[in-house]
Each structure stands twice: as structure tokens, then as C-alpha cells.
Amino acid sequence: YNNYFDNSTLPNGTRTAADGRRYEKQQYNALQVGSGSIVFSESNYFYKTNSSNQIRLESSGDMYNFYEKKNVYDAATGNSAIGSTFNNAPVKYSYKSDDAARVPGIVLSTAGPH
Image 1 (cartoon, rainbow, N blue to C red):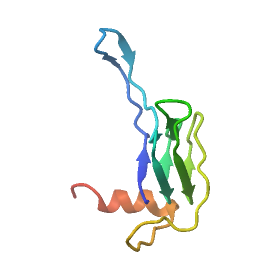
Image 2: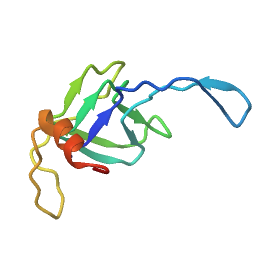
Image 3: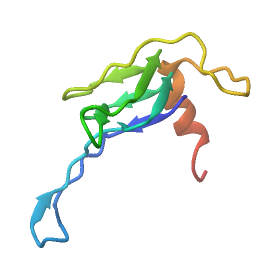
């Protein structure tokens, strides 16, 4: 909860893959849900992300659970998976998430070197 996914600075240039082919640098997605995953996404701020939430299964019949609530998607593009809603995440600790709209300000004022 309370993550800030910021893609305001677009990547540019190319990257060479192991096979020698060059690919344009691009932002893919912020959150990937894989085979066997149980993901609870709450009060996150997605800014200019592309395909913010993606389901990536090893086999089409693989199981996963994706839940989300109170996320903010600001200028997001592409196709993004939508999670089922939930009341309380089943974690063994208590927490109180901040309002997602406040997350960028909180992160920018308190995270990283100052």
C-alpha cells in the first residue's frame, strides 16, 4: 500500500538484448501479477504508467488472485487489469493506509536523500 509509481520521465534510446537485437526503451507496467500470486493493491498512486497492472501467467490455466481498492490512476495509458475489491487485507499486522491522492506529496517530501 501507499506506493508511488511515477513514469513522468519517459525512457529514451535503445537497449541491446542477449540475441543482439536492439529494442526501444519503454516503461512496461508498474505491477505484475504472476502464476500463483495473491496480490492486494491498496491506496497506490500510478502516474503516467502504461498498462499499470498486468496479469502474466506461465500457463493460461494458472491460478492467481488480484485485489485492489482506493488506487489512483493519473494519466495512465494502455490496458490495465482490474482487481476484485476487498475489505481488509489478510495480514498479521495492523496498518492504516494514507489517502492515495496524498501519496505523491508524502513520497516526494520524505523519501530519498534530503
